[in-house]
Length: 330
Image (cartoon, rainbow, N blue to C red; front, top):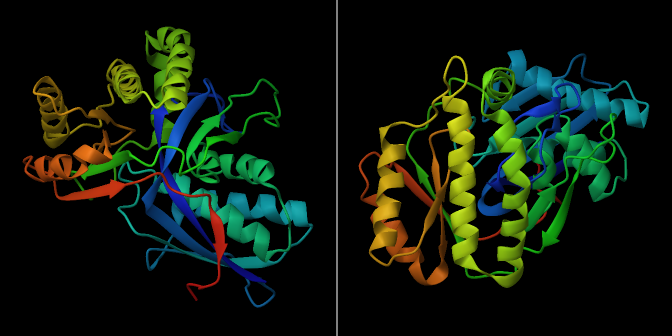
């Protein structure tokens, strides 16, 4: 009863920020994302009577506290569906910094759900996997799929209509690139979950966010349909800035950016003014992701590496669906 899955991180082009249900992880607004080819999590899960308790090892370290609690909660959901009481060993590895604003929770939760359900003998479809992944980390419901993905917020109180669906496959827009500028390897001080709750409760501008976000979704979907890079980039960049404005206006303020984050933002605007078209987007963390086209990829990489404080650059195409693989981690 052992299985291994690989899932890729995703970056939201129209962000999800705030929940209407904390326990079920139901979002206040629908959102859209692209799955990234080079940022991935591999997770092996084994259920066995030999284990007296659940074990979770992340990046070669036995974990405890809230990180382990989240994994155990998802294992319990899987066990409940399978009507099993067996304990499990979970070993997971990211090929990029964990909990640093690069969506490791999204790829991690998606890989966990896919491996755990397969290991215990459940044959769930992508919709059900997406719903189950959402219960661990909201954005992970999108990482079940590759390409261009929409997470519908849903209306039902039990969350049965809140799941992700694929809009376009990973190969629909092969010229599109997401270039990641890593500016720190440190874990962020304010986790997304607590940051969202704080924003919903205290930000005076939150209603404005909810009123404007549906238009952003329509524009991004239209841009993707027509492969309109300028519309895609402008909408995504503005949406990210709106989300961070919410955080700054909470009590107390949440500021995820560091000086290098701001340097990249200013550089991208200057590059655009001088004819090199790219756009930035930033999730709940300091890392900056640049949208560009293949023809400008190498120039963007070169310029990004030259920005003070950038410690790594990772260029991504659109990634594929999460999948079962056959090389176990233990």
